[in-house]
Length: 224
Image 1 (spheres, rainbow, N blue to C red):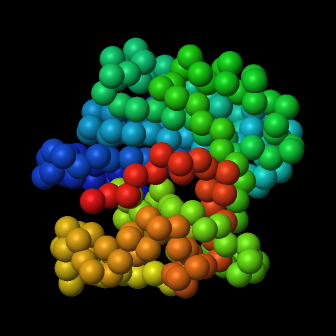
Image 2: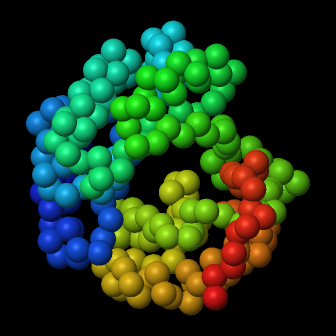
């Protein structure tokens, strides 16, 4: 784990006050000290991915992670977040992927975490692109990921999808271009326009993606 997380957060916020810093974690490594440092550094969003509400459902799907520690440290962070007056400053979310093994725990999950955080989100299970899907499996719908997100590899390459683990949709490199230039580039704009029209089949990476299959895009407005 990078021990500079609070330092990096503070640097981002000081150099671009409009930037929003988000952390996604299972909570196991979130010590009280690190949590306090992140809050004080100005983190905007903390999302906790905890796919279960018991050792029996959680640990078989998250091998090597101690559920008791996850529960303890996530609860402690949220108590500190609440007591420190951060409810209106930092958005906190608890999310669980719904599968048959944990479905029966959803009511208890919501009852426990709901009052403790900003929002509880139950999501559906889907596959990463190119993990066995066939052409006929592609979901011809828009994509939420490309609206306001961009992701970077350690070599500086940029992609619009966090599931692009094999770099099939690289749109630039931050060592050669600014983040703004990459975001506004022709390549990135083309990908967003194609996905706005739901034509995942026209993009190599997206042509084997079935994410957001159950999402209602009826009110999805195409950006001008």
